[in-house]
Image (cartoon, rainbow, N blue to C red; front, side, top):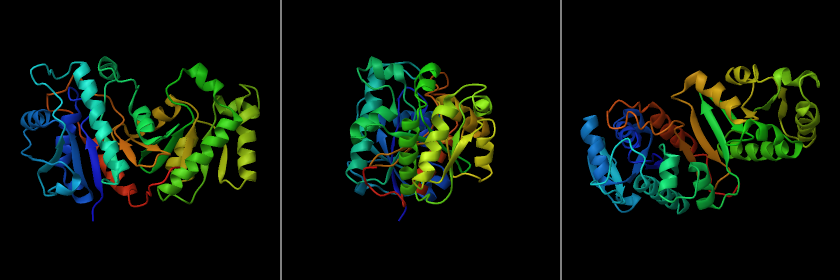
Length: 334
């Protein structure tokens, strides 16, 4: 049976609702997965109207009530948007709160085992804050609602997988976080994530931080003092890991199949590599949790919301990746 994927619609005022509509109408998605949408019926009716995609909304209370036929959008309607106050393309506390509630419901379904994965749409940090939601983004919400202290982020694009040692911190702070102990901890947890996704063979590479990985201290000592010792100790413990490998080469080598994954040492290092390769098909996976979550990695695009022109490619790919990995994924605390 096809995997069951929960899809919260994200910020109702952004492009989330329309890319969900377009994705449900996509034949590849229909063939690969059964989707349960969590959102607001009125918002979804509006999105169906301006995209001119003739989907029928089937309102359900639980996933077992879904009618998984072509051109049917199975919706758990939280009815939490007042259309009198709703404005497409505008930051709104109402929409930030609604987006959080869609995510929370999808996590509830996954925690209960009623869906196999969650594939998320974009949310707006300003709207979350205006709605009194004390989280900066999806990863923090998923961590809190699944009891996961430090979820891992992995990008996948064209078979290349990239993990991140640091995420939303300044570049100065990111450099300070490149320590031997942190690298060892992350490699071990990344390996557990890969195992859970069915990726059991291959070598992980660690990217260098400095130009040419520091050239033995000529351009910085992070590699000498932290990265190389971490790799040597991990290898001695039996981990298939190499590095540091210059960031100007390691991602190309991974794309060629030399490595099963790369540990990027800071946010933009891995983001630039993956998104330059294929922006629309760079999909995020949040690892280290008891549930599987995939996601688009683009913003709410408020400036084009409601025009029907937003591309659904990333949403389609996120659902397909959730369907791809869910058969390998076992519910366990990593």
